[in-house]
Length: 393
Image (cartoon, rainbow, N blue to C red; front, side, top):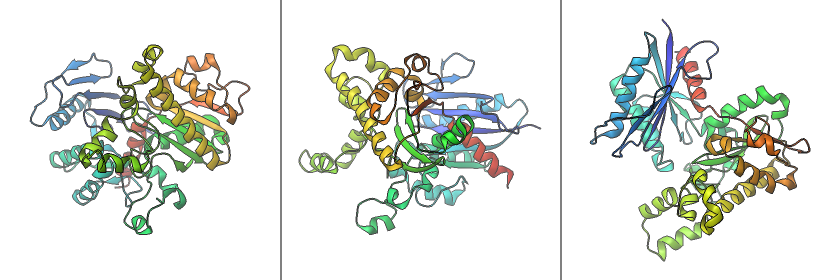
């Protein structure tokens, strides 16, 4: 009997799912995948590969659990007699305890719930899915794969926060995120560029959330996200790095409560907050010619990326390979060109034609830095980890 692994990537209002055959080697393209969108809204939809998007009724009392039940139903219909041997979950935060994928039981689940305040946009929803499936299918292994794990190789000087030392002892430190994406790139770049990827590499994961990772020998040595997924780059709705004094001002002078500040930083800042229009560059770019705030939002977005690339290049002592990935990184040629133009001092030069067609290499022949576009594959990494754990139990 053939075997399959289900991968779930749970957000606050959507669940991505992918079903992988456990052939050897593990196929990088799932046998089937899709997404439930708009969970909790009045018009949830289901996207399945090869099928038109359709509206789906979800129980309004527990819409998230209803979405999970729908996915289980659709998975069952797609197994075609194959056996489901594990469910792999992208879990954003493993804290100071979990550095490797782990099979989740009640004790592990309780540990992971302690990290919800560190990743409130993602952690609770992944854990809800794990909890529901543990209850429904206690025999089926649930494997947590952590976005923080890839950054376990960061040196202590990168992990340490400049707070009293006992904060470090209590677990307040820089963890880093988007680790499943960067782990995939560490494999894909080695395959594509060989030793050329083992030098001074910076990967730019640019999506609704965004971060940079500096690598040497394809291992993380510095990254822009830190203690939480609010740190570093300006994002779609998240602020990125911010003077802590601004937070004190908001709370002490403008009298915003903790929940109001959290909502502002996570949901009302970034591209959306500055532009007042949208969190999506694809929406903003056509409007910038006639809207000063949109112009400013996009300029700030690029500036923050350029500034942080410069900082990571300083840590690396130069730059050999710059890689764009994730939704914006893979598909937005205009922003890639603007970022590349600002990095001319590093020796970056973008080839206009290659960039326009999203070629794997978009740097010009004169560029001292290879600039690449590499699609990420977090689901395959999660499936790979789950398969390895299941095979050893």
